[in-house]
Image (cartoon, rainbow over all chains, first blue to last red; front, top):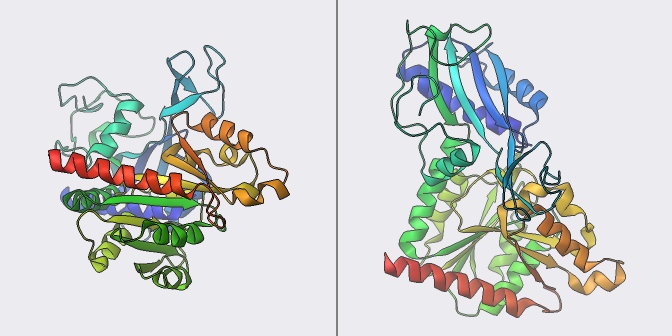
Length: 113
Length: 274
């Protein structure tokens, strides 16, 4: 989707943190991405390299960690883990699932160079 | 509890908890994380990363947008104004529906924010109805964000108890992730788009409170199965409310107008109680 805007959001956060901690260079940026966050990893990686130019994270490695997709099944009323947005309930096979998590897009931490 | 330094006294939060955390307030993690120099192993295993030089932040990538959205929501709450974010593919009939809605709402105070990549066409169409409208051109952007909407609201002079309609950029993907400070999203889906559209682009329909099946007057000409639209909408969002509307013929408009009035009244009541 809008990986370039996401990277701009990341750059704001990284610049704020680098200033706060008086850090000139970041070596690694780790982000957590939910399975339903709709983030295309290749596109994010591509945009990251471009958007971080001139920031403390220029040339930094981007590490992407997956978070599971979770949903509430309205047939068996259980919170279940699913891999794909349209998967049926793994417990009862029901099809009425409301996503309850897995849309996270979070910067976890920064490794200082 | 923070997964690295162990600060805080609550349980480690799962993704569903984190979800509510993200939307309940506008900042990231609020306890201060310093540089973890020399603390040694800190509870996380990171291959190839030295744990003594990590800055823990655990901040949502969209934290900045969410802060703007939070501020917008506070302004709207202060006014008891009800704001909806209209989302759809391009060409679903959002602007026509809005023009007819404005006519049907009569003397209800309202304002419109129009989002498009280029041109003032849509705002011009809204202004022709007599309503105040501001056009936001996103340039290359594929969605409106909280910052743009905040600036647009400054120009609109919203009155107490008004309705604010935010017509997002026609796009069924990106606007789902960007909170604008609205009360809810309303997805417009025209019946010519195909019954499986909710399955192809589930996120937007999951994020919406109401889906309007628009252009129902065209249904007999397009071999569409209206019930399948509804089944597929509920497949991706068991909570979703659905209205069948033709902005052109006026079919279903009354139910839509009632839905808007009911939600505005509800918000005003909540506001008065606080």
